[in-house]
Length: 409
Image (cartoon, rainbow, N blue to C red; front, side, top):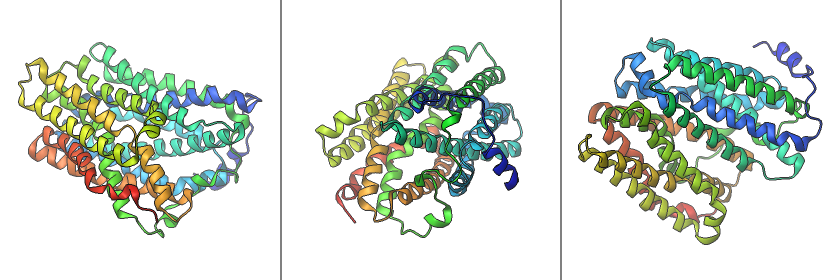
């Protein structure tokens, strides 16, 4: 995209929107909800996407993992571009881009085209996410109220809505029609709400420094390997469940399409329950106690449920219920991990908070993508059950990293 064009677009006037910054909270939250609905709409229908490509589980996992390349590129470059040009360029353009590309991606049957679209989709979604969070942080500073926890909550509600909708229509509506209608609705909704908050868009050159990092700046910092390995062990399950929970229920447990997305819904639901009660949990328990609870109860309960669902016959209803229970344990056990590690990162690092956020983002996506590739290989060689056990074993392994909680640098 031409730099001069970006400068022109960044100063173009939007239609008249809301004049009071206080009134922008609701439109902003609606955008986060629609973002979650749009981005997660195709996840419950991964089995059909895989069938379109006519590939095995292991290869499909590799194809999905390549989307991380686009996200890494976005994290390495977009922060400075937003600071330079503002969000008025990126929010509408990337919203149009990812809504259109999700629809195109689910209808692709050629592997090469899927790879190109998935990498591009990773860049578009990550760019929109960075720009939208920068805007949310700006509004939060102006109204002097805590807003970011609400934005995370409504995004999760949008993701839940996507799973519920898929469960209701999966055996009645084709994949292309389902995703196409959802993306059109989300695009129109996001565009409408962007117009409302346009008067309060971040101006070029005034973006919050938390979003103004680059790959070249981040790579100068010393990597805190014990911390990042522990973080990887804690958060891998979030990514693995999105990729594999529906496919496992559909193919290994032979559950009907209508109910195959329910396990991921349970996982996401218990994660939301845990995060909504974070303030109560942090008041009553120490970080080490929470660490051990997530590792032993969350990881142990998850692994036990997955193994039981594997050992039981698919015709036995207990197999499906065991898998649901496994994901309930996993969702609850990982629910407080991300906020916990954010607090730990601040305490352990001597760098600025903006630098820590930048490094965490890049390390997170890079390491998770590598593990996702390994899980795909294990799934291909040993079966999906063993691939699903890996994030559970990783979560249990957190008990060997309790020293990360107490160290200060």
